[in-house]
Length: 285
Image 1 (tube, rainbow, N blue to C red):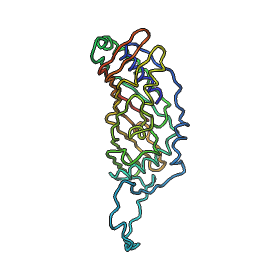
Image 2: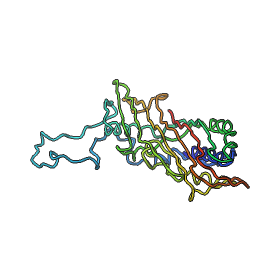
Image 3: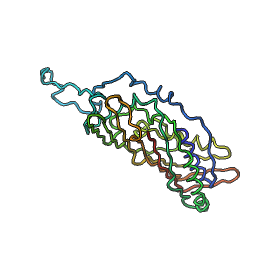
Image 4: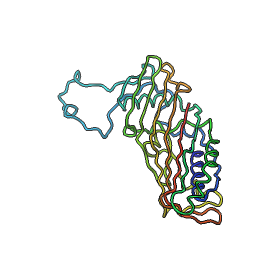
């Protein structure tokens, strides 16, 4: 995701003074991402679906007189059985099992700059002139070899607005609507519902300030990074648990707004007011 942060830094720099530049950072290895996801392993094949701590406990569950025959055991989720469900907890359990079998794969990241708006003030007209340049620069950053997005072992039931799983016996297709997320300039990659589910920008403030000749007063400024319409679609082979190539996608729209930001590019100091950049972000397999 550091390359995505670099491209958002590029957009921010263009917004600052229509300057196309970016910082170079090594890509995070897939092994590092896999190391963070220690809660679910390749050896796991089943997982119980249990109630979260936030759900209320009914009288029946606190009544010690309930007989063993009346008790309901948690449903057992297995990849081999597939899944037909609209229960978020069940779909999440199935997704985590499948993700554990696919976190070593290489995924393709695609970025598409939809718009670049200089906002208010004198600098706005100069920024807008550079939109075609920015679009081409972002388009060149399609990368194959990214790790599985998000931190699947950390995803919470409350992170997903809705989820469904449909199995035809051989394949299970999962569709998820993730809860949208809004960060400031210093968001963290695996925090928040979108971060845990799909990964978000990891400190756009640092990404901008580390670029040669570019700086911004993020401490006193206001930046809003919105992750809109985050969705996940994956197709799983029930027999192997592997993702079906060409049928898996994680996507959202990044809407970055410099609400109020003092910045400097080389010798020029400018103030951005409601400047905005919009990028579509997609990871596919």
